[in-house]
Length: 219
Image 1 (cartoon, rainbow, N blue to C red):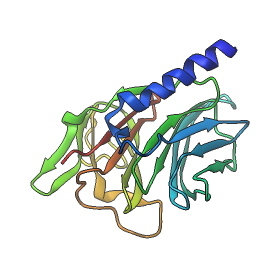
Image 2 (tube, rainbow, N blue to C red):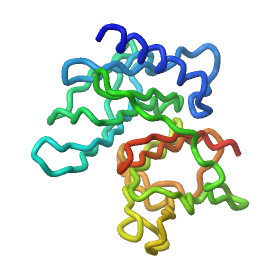
Image 3 (cartoon, rainbow, N blue to C red):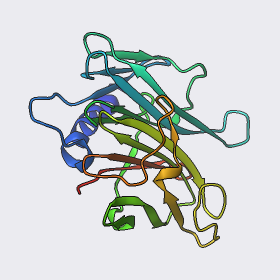
Image 4 (cartoon, rainbow, N blue to C red):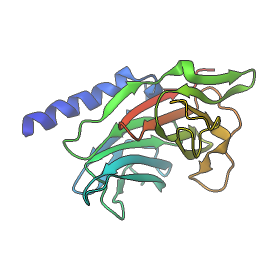
């Protein structure tokens, strides 16, 4: 058991090198997300700043598979640390994402010993125009939980199911189309931006297969 935990901690550390969304100035340490006994601790956040905790999980404890979601903002202390305990314990199969709203730095994890599946973001699905990125289209997943963070600006979330709520084209074609401006605020009442621009962060969780994709808008 000790060997498995050590291996996964090493893999988690490598994510900060491999994922484009985690790029940040060299003088800032990587955001860290550590699971505990029913808690999650975030360290290296901006002191006094907001940290968004975003999670999606599958709970089969009562014989019926249920979706569990979390999208909340907490304030980091003077040392840049946050300890968060959900009102209800998250199921074992859960992806947890922490984002420092001040800088856009990301940490990805899950309950102890759960191996989170991180995939490259399908950037070809981003819908761009002259003003920025409007949303995504032709994303081949059945259900999604999406988080948008604008560093120093705010955070928003939306849920979608293929051919149903949140799917802009409303077609049962095996693909999702999402408009970011329809997302709901996590912090305050600031409306979601109509277009995403450089440095904005997008996190997409496939809530059926439990895979996570992240990217930072590059223009």
